[in-house]
Structures are given as structure tokens and as C-alpha cells.
Length: 320
Image (cartoon, rainbow, N blue to C red; front, side, top):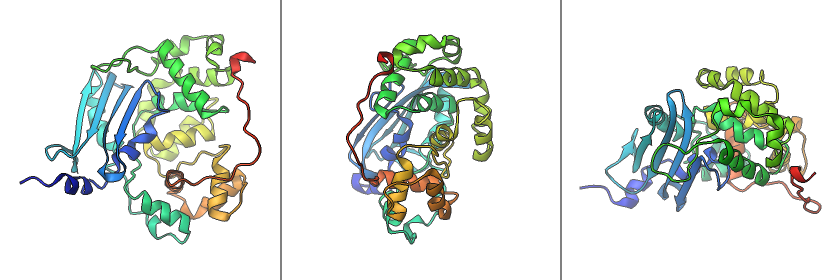
């Protein structure tokens, strides 16, 4: 006799929807679709992601439901399907994306800081998965430099609509990330109507030029991958801190230089409404090795710094 649906879901132990959420850049991401019904370990849904692999373009579908007939690495209710030349690579990567090999014996639920302990308890089922795809992670993250997240997500959509091709499989309107050779050939002025100024266009092109190296970098220890990425002009601490988590599953990666993050950490850990990056790292020092996990759990638990002053008017760059 099969287990009841609610028992099967409670045994999943991974919040699949929340775990997979950091691979998507905005609700309108043309390369990564995510549909989640419910919350926590009892949620159901699917993620469909198109990317470029060492073997060529591929599309991966990860579905999770109350079905007793499917599982992945012991996680019940998980089903996989993949399409295109990169299908085998993506199927192999799926368990890492789900965070199956994430080390969760971090003891954060017993932390002396009440906010950290509470966030860890509420997020105990969220794993630090890894896509293994630095190129795909870097492009939208570079676009998020120096501008609002809404503008960046719109520019990511426009970049894909203009330079990408349809993804393998039956998913209409799903797009691959831009092919590196095509992206690298665009002159810097081409990006201007999309709202992408030269200081972000050039790092996009440099990342495209080095795309073939990223497969080797993605299997290095996080500290070595970080050092390699620092060699690319225009890819700095903020970008690397945002990429090493979802691409490599690094639980210690922190985005230094973020406009809001330092203030959130200062507020939660020291009741300081405003902080510097140096102060943020000082407050996170007790969590070295898990700093990125702490920040992610606090954000998912709704932590934020107080806001002061009026909202800033956003003027699109092409209208400057």
C-alpha cells in the first residue's frame, strides 16, 4: 500500500520550491520558469530551465507532487525530464540543483542570535543547491549591477528576446541564454537601447569570451572559483558573491557592495539601521563558512532594514 499524500510530502524534507527559487531572475525570466503551489515541504509545482551545457543546449523540467511513484535520490514525489543535446548533463545536475548533497548540519537553529535561530528553524527545509552553470548565472547578475532589480529583470528579458533562440523541448516561448559567440560580437552601442550602459555591456562581453572556461571553474572549490572570476574585468565582489551560491552551492558567499544587504544584516544582528560592508562582515564573522546561508535564511524570513526618505524616481538609461 502506498503512503498517503500528506505523509509522502512530509517525508520530502526539502522545500523544493524555495530551494529552486534562486535560479530564476524575476517572474518573467525567459530562461527559467517556476510555478509553486503551496508552501514548504508540502508544496507542489514545477521548474523548467533552459541553459547551455558542455554538450550543447538543454532544457530540464523538475516536477514535484504527491505521487508515490517518483523520486530522485530518495526525495519522494520528484520527476525529471530533459530535452536537447544537453539533456544528459542536465539530468545529472538535477540532484545538485535540488541541494541533495548540501551539508545541513550547521546548527544554526540553536544559534544564540534569536533572529538567526528563528530564520534557520523556519527555513530548515531550504537547501543550497548548485546549477553548475556560471555563464548562465553571471549574465543576469551583471545586469543587476548598479540599477534596480526591476530594471535589471526587464533588461535580462530584452537581452534574451533579442539574442537568444528557442530552447529544446515542447515549451513555447522558453529561451536559452544568449550564445556566447553572438553576445561577444555585439558592439557596446548595441546594448544602449536596452538600457545597458557600457560599464555593464563590456563585462557581459568578457564573460561571453571566457564562457568555455567556466565548466572547469564550476568544479573547483569555491575559493579557487572566486579567484578565477576576479580575473575578469567588471566582475567584482558583489557579482561573485551573488553567483557562487546558486552556481556552485557555496554556503559562505556574501554579496559585498550591496546597497541593502549590509543594512539588513546591521539591523537584524546589531539593531543598527545603517551599516557598512566592513561592519556587515564583522557581524557575520561568527558564521564564517555559512555566511551566505545565514543571509539567505534571514531574507527568506522577511528580514529588512528600515526605510527612510522618499522613493527615488527611476529614469531609464536610454532616456538620459
